[in-house]
Length: 434
Image (cartoon, rainbow, N blue to C red; front, top):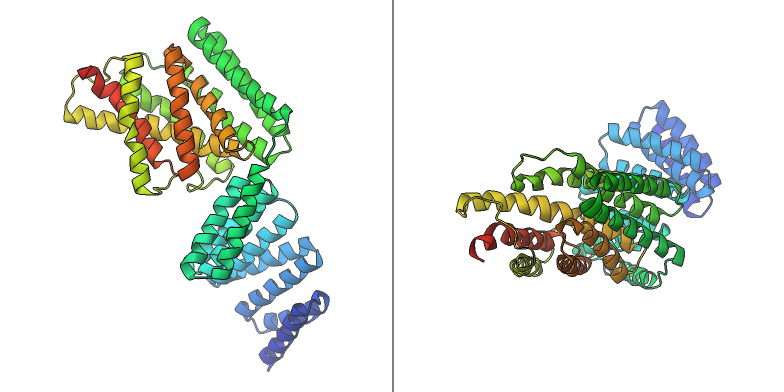
């Protein structure tokens, strides 16, 4: 009898809520909640708390809504109700979204997405991806917003929801127009150019003048980037500056790691450790997904075509640098081991940081080509140590090619292989034949 009474009160609450009267809805939801608590119906308690949270959110009482969402989320988790928990987590994300705490909001939305994925609820997965896209749009991170919308679009295509597919396509078109309209201030452009000049000067001094002085300059640049990123009010600027902190940090670590006595081939994995560590920390701190940084295969035909350029690029750079081989003899065993080391340590490590992270962050501030250009300048500056101006021009051109390929395909697969194979031919194969 009590259960029936509670269900009637719950239905009345739902009716008033649907009619746009959350105050009246709360009255009946509260009545239903009390009865459900008396009869210890945990699943109904969770459902009622969820509706109460929705009503509070509608009324603008975000703290009360947040509290109720937390309560029902705990109950749903206890009851192993994936859909219910997904709704509660989405509600928490929505409240933080309204409070303009976008990063925290995305954290809850992402947790919600995982629950819906586990429950194989495709419709809700698409909805949550669209909500995540809106948080990025609110912070003018349009590239990230497009990526999330594309995830949503792919799901709607999969389930055949043509109406939603059209809506998301329109959102993507609108975001692309906003990207085209991006005009960074002259002050910001000068600041970013200043960082490039500072890093380049530090590299020149390290290579040609005084290693210790270069180390000091890189340390100063690191702290300036840290302070600047902390003071910036722009989400996009903060992310770019924090990702750029990896550049002086890598050089500082590289200059202080004792590699004397280590065979030149093994310098690559040693130096790649801080590269991977920096990428991991940035991805975690900025909550960047593997897909966003390009850790996907993409169109295999296109990616393998990009990878095939590695041999040509390696040949051209060999003609410029003519390095000695990094292996004592050219045989299958040495070649396989050394190639694996080089592809992972140079191809993946460098492309993940420069293209996957720094370029992605740069493109949220600068337009596509400008973002590629800026990251290519940074990438080139870290090759001053080869002491060849012609090689710097070559590296810049290759970096522009890799940047454009990543911009168009959003996959690191092809450029990672191309980069790794280029160095394989440069250091392992051509020295024995040319």
